[in-house]
Image (tube, rainbow, N blue to C red; front, top):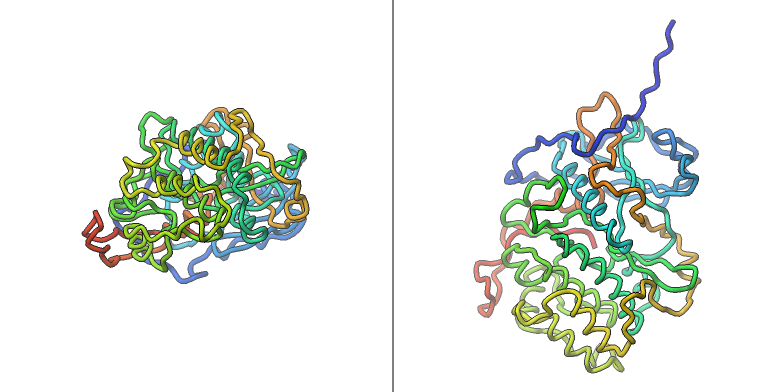
Length: 421
C-alpha cells in the first residue's frame, strides 16, 4: 500500500492571501478568553521541527494571543525567535491578514533605508504548529523594562536613544507612514559589543499610510470613529478626531521622553477622558519637581512638544530631536548610530526577556516576502503584534465623557481601541 505523503508548507506571495472580509463598519463582539481557539493545533515542544527548518529550543513567553519560542534555523544556522499565534476558529478576521501583510511590507520599505526598526524576514503557516512569525533572536530589554529595572534614564543617555528613534521615525514619515503606537514597550534596546545601547522601533501593526504611492497592499481603513493606539500616548487632536499624521508620533515620543526622564506620565488619568482633560488643562507637573537637576532648557522643550496647537510644536521629528539634544548639552553627532552609554552589561546580557528584534535581512523587494501556507486550510490568519489583535478584538468605547468646555472637540472623544502597554 502507498504510504500517505506528509503535508508540507508551501510558499505563497503575500499578495496571494485572501482579501475577502466583513465590512470594517461591522464591529465584532469581544470573545471570552480562550473561546473558539484553534484547539486542533498540536502542542509545541522542545526539539520539534517547524516548517522543515526551525528546531524549537525553549519557550520565551506566552500570552493570550500566542507564544514565542527560541528556535534554531537549520538553513541559516543561527537562532531565531518564532512566534506562534492562537487564533479564533469562528471569526476568520481576514483584515488581520491584511494588516500583517501591510506591516511586513512597510517594515521592508523602511528597513531598506535604516536598520533602526524591527522587521520580519519569514512568516507562514506550519500544517501542525499553525501560523508563525520568524524574527531575529536577541537578548535585550524594551525601554519599558529598562525603566522598570534601572529607573530613570539620564538626559544624556536619553538624548542618544532619541537620536536613533528619531532617525527611524524620520525615515517612516518620509515614506508617508505614521507608526501610531510609539511607547516604551515598542522601543527595543540591546547592547552592542562596544557596550553602547542601540534602539529599534518595533511593531508597525497599526501603522497609518498618508501617501498612496507606497508599493504595498493597503489594508482597509480603520472604522470611522475608532482611534487605534495607547491612550496615554495619543495627541489631543488624534483623540478628538482620529486624524493621524507625523505629529501623532512626535507627541507620543515626547511622552516617551518624559516617562524615561522622570518615571511618570506627563498627563495623569485612568481613562482616555481623564488624560484628555489633563492635557487640555495643561495639568503637567513642572519638570523641576519630578527630575531635580534636569537642564532648565528641557522644560521649554516639553512645553513646546506638548503645545495644544500643533502649529506651535516642532514642525518635524528632526528639529524636535535636535532641540532635545541641544537642551541636554550632548554634542551633536549626526553620523553616530550607536549612542554612548555606560557599559552596564549585567542587566542586558543576563536578561531572559529574549526580545524579538529583526534586522530586515533579505527584504530588498517588498512584495517578495513569502507567506508559507499549509495545504488544506482556506485562510492563513496571522497578525504580527499582540497589540494589533487586542485592538481589533476590543469593541470601541461607545461614548467617552465630553471634555471640559475649553476642549476644541466638544462632541467627545471617539471610540478608542487601546493596544497593550
